[in-house]
Length: 172
Image (tube, rainbow, N blue to C red; front, side, top):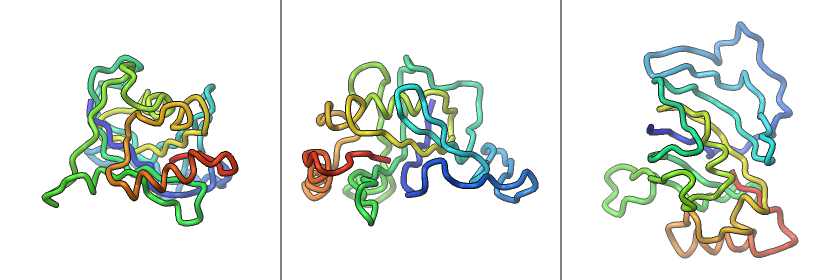
């Protein structure tokens, strides 16, 4: 299952007023259903927040034991006013010809547990915003797991938040 995980926009988590059912923010195409701003964030039992922007197509759904996921994603620190990006698959191809997806296997201990939890339930081509709180599901406890910053500058940006107990280490 290939999933596009969009975690690249800053928003108010769950405080928006949902659009009316007649809104044009929702549309269905052969690539899936775009539900846009119609939905609110859902908080999972572990504290991870998810919000779908596009429901993917296909019959395969990501499960906690999915063997391979290819993700197009952008990771941001939401503690900062600018929502500093510390990871972006669009920037990980040194020759500049297209993004290289992050490939992970769930339940193998290679990706942040909060990211894994947020991916469960997605379908191929879906777009979901995932907000991972600091602590046991994030870089606070697992600094070496994927997605790993791709440059020293990105790593410094992440460390400036995660290693500073006075800052909120929530990532999106």
